[in-house]
Image (cartoon, rainbow, N blue to C red; front, side, top):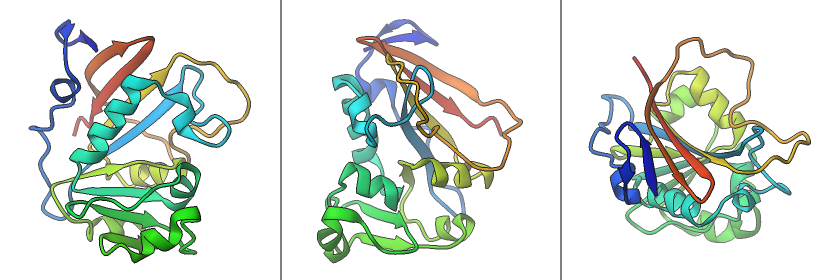
Length: 201
């Protein structure tokens, strides 16, 4: 992977996505939104975001996923991407009003480190454990979290694809983010562009 900004050089994924700046707030973890999008803004192909990625993107996703204390995700994403139970040192928190987690529902619900929650995201995030939480979508949950000003960092991969159609965007909802974010890095690998943004305030 090559970093283009702020200091052009070859980097490893742990170097590019170093988390030494991440500190939990007094009432919640540091929350990182991790997403992939095509160059024309689509976040899924045939209903799954996994089909958009390449080897480097998968490595970035897994690095972010495995380095978090808690993974926070919507039930629709769990069903679409066929999530499995996490290792004992991590927690999986799924936003769902129905409790339907798809094909792996029984295994996920049986895991002691899986929790299904519902309600206002402002209340939910105060119950999330650990120093760092990675938010893995989908667009409705992302939109709710951004609207509530609960996202500290965004890691966005731009895939070199144009698929048109009516795919969802990375975040959806009836809100408008007026303040710009700070661009922390730009990297590239095999046509994919990796962007990392930090909240400015």
